Each structure stands twice: as C-alpha cells, then as structure tokens.
Length: 314
Length: 282
Image (cartoon, rainbow over all chains, first blue to last red; front, side, top):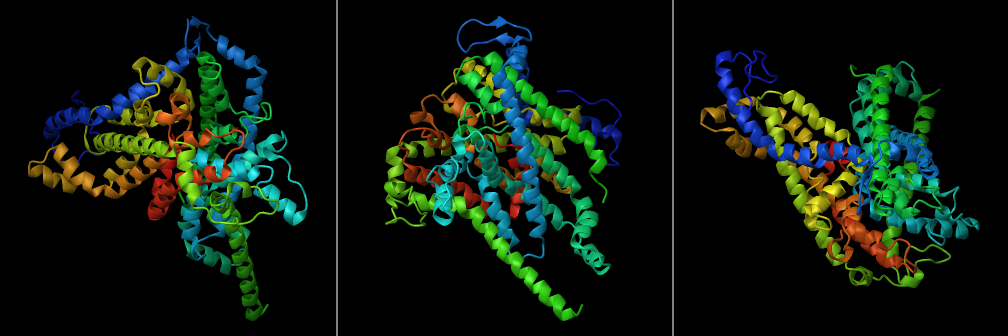
C-alpha cells in the first residue's frame, strides 16, 4: 500500500514519538490497513458506489428489463416532468412529509418533556414506545389494516359506543392519507421520543429548579433552559425524520396500494411500479435520482439553516 | 397562596398527569392488544358489531394453523438464515474497518472515512434499480445471496464501532505491541473482547433491520413460497379475498415477538442503537 512520507503527523499519532521512528510504523500500518479495510471497501464499492453511478447511467436510457436499450439523454427526466402520475406522486409524498414530520416531532417532544426525569417508570415508556420502531414494518401495517377495516376496531368502537359509522378510511381519498400518517406516527414516534428523552436527561435539574425559584413558569423554563440544550438533538431528529419520511413505502403499499386511484401513491412506490410492474428501469432509476436530489436538497437546507437555531456550545 | 393549597394543587396536577399517562399508554398499546386478541379468536368472530377483547374461545390453535395456511415455517427459517448471515457479514466487515480507522495510521485515512460516511447519504431507493441489474449480471436474482450481501456493507457499523474503539486507551495496545502482538493480535485479543457491548448493540439492531426488511426482498425474490422472508409472506395476503385475519394476526404477532424480546433485553442500550436504527433500516 501507500507509504506516508509527509511530515504532517496523522491525527491520533502518539505524541512525542520520534518522527524518524514513525515512518516504518506507517508503512507497516498501511499494509495492515489495506487488509482490514478490504471487505468494507470492496463491498461499498461494488454495492454502493458503483450502483450510485450506474443509477445515473441507467436513468439516461430507455432500459427495459429484457430487450434492447437505447440512449435517451434526459428523456426520462422530461417524461417525469410531464407525467401527471409522477407529479401527483411527488405531491402525495410532500403531503405525507408535511403532515408526518411536524406531528411526529410534536408528539415525541411533547411526551419526552412530559415524561421527564421526575416521572417514575419512564424507562418502561421508552421501551414500550420503541417496540413498533423495531417490529417488522409489514407486521405493524397489517395490524393497522385490520384496525382501519370496516368492522375493524375503530369502526366497531365508534358504532357501538357512539352509534356513528366510521368512514371507510383506506378507500376514501380524503381519509386514506391521514390514516397512513396516523399509522406512521404510531409506528415511528418512539424513535424521536428516545432521542429527545436522552437529551432532556442531560439538562441539569439544578438550573431548572433555581429558575423555578426565581419565578419562571414551565413554558419559560422550557424555552430558555431546556430548548437551547436540546437543539442539537432536535436537529438530528428533524433531519433524520425528514429523510426517512420522503422514503415512505411499506405503509401506503400495504394499507392502500397507493389508492384510491393514485391518491396515496408515493415516490418510492412509483419507482417500484415503474421498475417491477412496467419493467421500465430507466424511468424507475430517474425517479429514484429525483428522490435522491430532493433528499440531498433537504439535508443541505437543514445543515445551512442550523446556524440560526442549533446551539452546540451550551 | 398558602403552602397547603400549593401542595393540594400539585397533587391534583400529578393525579391528572398520571391518569393522562395511563390513557396514552392504553391508546398506544391498543393496536398491539387488538392484534393479539384477534390472533386468538375464531375466524367468524374477527368482525363483530361490538369489539370484544376475547372471542367465545381462546384459540391458541390459530398459531399452529398459520403455519399450514401459508408456509410460514419456511418464511421464518429463511428470515432467520438471512438475518443471521447478514448480521455476521456486517459485524465482521465493519469491526475490521473500524479498527483501521481508529487505530492504524495510513495515508488518506481521513478522506477515506469521509467517503465512507458519504455513502450513508445514498438512499436505498436509488440503488435498487442498478442493484437489480447487478444481481441479474451475477445470476443472483431470486437467491439467498441477493438477500444477504448487497446491504451488508454499510458505513453505520464502521462508524459506531470506530467511535467505541477510539475510547479504548492506547496504552493497552502499546503494552501488547511491546510483547510482540501485531495489529491482528491486538484486534482479536484486545479490541474485540473490549468492544463486546458495542458489538452486541450493532448485532441486535442489524439483525432486526434484516428481519424487517421488505422492499428489497419484494423486488428480488420471485419464488416466495421457497425463498420468501416473513414480511414477504405477510404481504402475500394483502388484497386477497376472504383474508384469514385471525391467522394473519397470529403470523404478525409471531413476526414481532423476536424483535420485542430483543428490545426488552437491550433496553439499557437503546440510545446507542439509535444510530444504527435511524440510518440503517434497509
């Protein structure tokens, strides 16, 4: 492997070691490093780096699963731009994100503040809320499919206790998306709950108490003591939740199959349908890249925007 | 305001707070209780005008019937095989590379690490199309290889274990080095044993993410009855007429049980696993 002949000490080098003695160590370390890194590097190159580039390539072709391929340039992208289904699918995904992310953050942050260190047994809630995060998504969604079914628990409960018929949640274009959002919140908020809960643990109780003695109410205490200290977690949680919610797939796929019509079809479902129902890989790949660009854009906005509100030095 | 009214107000507030908490817990647990309850009911009692926690009998037999209704025994074995093998590859590859990034000095280390982290940006949905093509080229479509290997090289594990390795005092290794212990010896005999807690976390969360993965198996597995995993088996029934909901719930509950046990077992370490869960999930 490479040998390091520069005079700049690599970070983490033991200090005070004689410089002359370090070069053979570097050479030897370099040799070992190539062995230690080989499996990961090889795997990432073959299964991530190469496919990422390849995805861009495929998106420029008319690329049926079987049959002849032809170069289109940006043809697939302009097709997407003019495809009413794709436009709708992007809108649906954005609607899901706009509903899901704020609700998720409000629910998880609210519960985390409420279930603060003063509550006995909060560890039980942490574990409890985390369960649907870890159980297989498909199993979670199956349960909610039954729950939303006419005659299911929600419908049955409303009928027998209040005497009203529940709407056909999954078959109605008004209710299908809220139903998907509700299911997703139930499934996913435990993750952010744990993130916020761990952050709130770090807020010194003594500061909160002395603020209380000085007459600060709960809202003021949250705004001026807790909030500044949890902004890094807030940043992490919102960024992660934004990214993963743009990738929503299993919930609409199993609850509604994207229906009624295409009312709840999402970008990833579109990728799946183009690729494996209509076998047009070029279009699927282009749609995947559009998603990637959206995610990169959101992440970039988050990172550049964080200066305004994220506090790293409390 | 006297201190008596103050403490009375506090008592009321804490009472209200606890009542609300119990309500939240019940609403939250509702779907899970409903799943278990339905899984134990006779088929014709799944949809009743009034919801009942228990049917006319507790049918444990539903759990056995789920296996004959669809080849769930096969699905469970496949899921287990894929998750165990995949987890092994993830832990082996990422502990090795984490050691290199934490302890070995080589040129371009920082740049390479940034490249590693950069791969985390790429969403799975971008990769599935070329990955499918790659599997076709390798002849791996509809194979266990395709279920195990493509997503087994992720930078999450490397990142997690590197952070842990960095906390191990360098003196431990230096002492071993004086005694003639090379990087491999020090990796296997010092670092790996010390990193057991971190490796346990990585193992459990990786296992769970393989266990639940859906999109990729849906794409790459054609012979579901033969190589299907549990999520694929469950999804088979969507949209079928006359779904046997009680059996479906029995199968769903069984799919959840291993992960619930692991979460409870690992409850002290959930926070550390957040990274693997939030960013992984392939």
